[in-house]
Length: 379
Image (cartoon, rainbow, N blue to C red):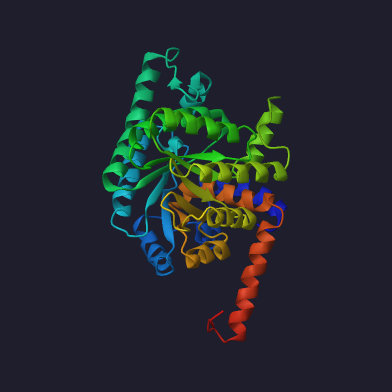
């Protein structure tokens, strides 16, 4: 992933190879899959979860299903999400689980509804009047699946983190998420929306979401990220001659990300925040602002998270400090998690120096352990 040309070539070839059933799964399993995924089944994540627990690191479980297209697939995915919630409830260090609405709904339906959403600081509505009767019934099943998952989470005290996806379906996802959030987050944060700050409109959306939650007397649950669809978003907008929603540069994205942190920490009594970041400065900024405000590092409304396989130096240092911190731990059959893996590869290669820094830290640690003949001395 330190070679951009290899990522660009490999992303397309890998998807085709899996689709054509070429014998590449063993190679994928022993390389990128092993680095970023907890296993091919829920049970296979157990050892990783136990290892993380030894270092006071939690896990956010995520069944890597997305892009499904049939009602049978959507129902199976819903049942698997519920199984994850029940599994998480038996583990002391799995407080949250992630879901993708594209695992529960047809992409084309979400895209059609995207222009029919109205979300203000007073109301959130999805106008289904222009849908056919069959499409309205289909949408009702999507809502029902989402509600059932959130109900299970509320009953078992497991948070449901709804992931962000492409902008041309994100308004639909936001509206659905806010609708269930205002129902289930009356007493505690059960439902979390994800806000991608590489979009220039998301800081305003975050503040609008908070106002809506306030008006509904609900706690706003929010995971803030920089984002994982940047290359895809920019390419589509340029091809269609549409407004590019991506920030003009990384500095603008960083500015809005840190402003989002500040806003949430200023309202931490009514916002439950997940800071999902691999950026050392943003994490340090959050910790320093907490300390300056006299707040606990393990404040119940603040959680840090990094992807499994990335930024271990951030995760384990935060845990040692006593912060609430987790690894985002996806699992699923190799064919199902290919889209996730390709985004990780593209995300790493598109962030200047990210992979180089990861490799530098890993090589430095390997050299240190060799020097001490495999022992890990106290630092």
